[in-house]
Image (cartoon, rainbow, N blue to C red; front, side):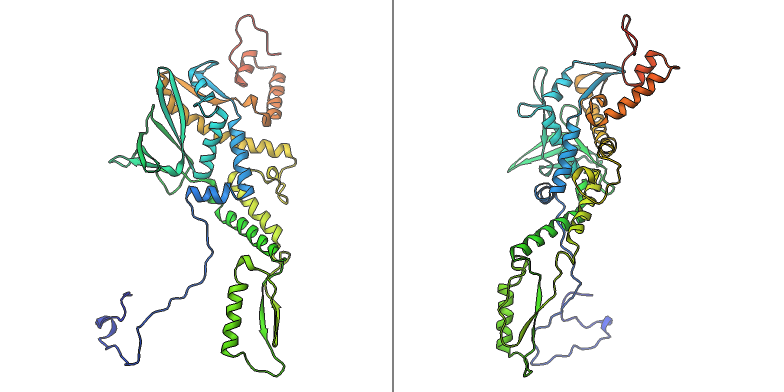
Length: 395
C-alpha cells in the first residue's frame, strides 16, 4: 500500500479516475489499533533506575546476591597446590585505592545482574604495582575487528573517549548468556521486565488512589426527571471539567459536585476487587525467580516451597551464588594468568561459606565414617593437600 494520498491511477486500481468534489478538503486516512501496555525501556540506566533504585524486591535481590557472592573468600592454586600468599591475592584484596576487594566484587556482580555485562580494566601503575577498575556498562561499547571478533572497548566519559584493548594487561569483558547477541550479555532483570512494570505500576496506582481518599473511578450519568439531553454548551463544560480536574492517576478518586440530574456510578475496581496484594506478591515472585532467589529469603509470602529458612538459604548458595562466583573465577583466571606468568587458577573457599556449614559438616561426618579411605584420600576429598611428615591424622 502506497503512503502517498491521493493514490495515482495505475493498473493496480483498474485505471479508474479519482472522484473530486469542489467542497472536499484535504484527504486523510485514520488508522485504529488496539492499545498496548507501556513497558520500561531495556537500557542499563532505565533498568537500574526503575528496578534497583525504585523497586524494593529488585533492590534486595541484587544486594543479596552481590553481597553474598562478594563475601566468599578466594583461593589461589598453582597446578594442584594451594598458594597462601601471592601478588594476585593482594590485588583482589585491594583492587584500587578507592575500593576494598568486597566492595569491588559487589559492584562487579551488580553490573552483571543489572546489565548482563561487567567490564574490568587492569592498570599498570609501576613495577609490581597494578590496579583493577570497573567500567560502567552504559559507558562502554564493544569494538570488533574485521572478522567480527571483539578486539577492544570504547569507554566514554562525558565528551572524552578512549579505547582499551581486550587482552591480558588491558581489559576483560564478563557476560551472562544471551541467546540472540554475540558480544553482550543478557541481564536477569530484563527477563523479569513485565513483573517489574506490574509491581511498580501497582505501587503508583495504589499511591494515587490513597492520595485521593481511596475512591475508585466512575462515570457521570445524566438522567433528569423530565427527560432530555445536555446542551452542547453544558456537555463541553462538563467534559472540560472532567479532563482538567478529574483525569489522570494523580486525580484518581477526586470527589465531584453533581447538579441538574447528574448521578455518579462507580466503575473502577477497588484494591480488594483487584486482589491488589496478591497481584504484587505474584509479580514479586516472578522477579525473585528471574534472579534465582527463593521468595522466602525476600519476605514474599505464599510460595514457601522450602521446608525452612535454612534449606532455602542453602539452595540459594548452591544454585545462584556459587555458580556466579565460579564463572567469575574462571574468567578472571584466564585473563590474569598471562599477566603474572604462572600457571595460576582462582577458585572460591566453600569451607568458609556460612550458608553451607551444614553441608560441610555432613561431608566430614561421612568421610570420618569411611574406613576404607586413607587419611590422605579423606583430605583430598575435602580439598586439602596430603599430610606432611610429622602431622597427625585426620581424626
